[in-house]
Image 1 (cartoon, rainbow, N blue to C red):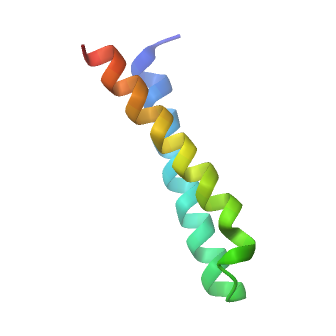
Image 2: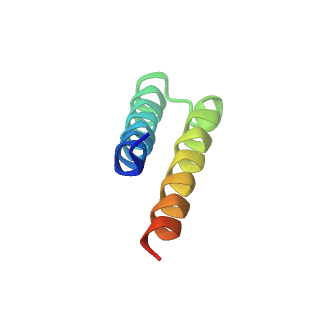
Length: 57
């Protein structure tokens, strides 16, 4: 599979998860209940960063 495509998908999913987490936190006024969504976004962002760094070198 194309590495740039995978990196784009990872970054897009990280952004979408962060937006969903922010929206749910504002809507339900509950950041702690949506903490897991932010952690999913963080893991996806770290995976994207690691893969980008790995394949650039």
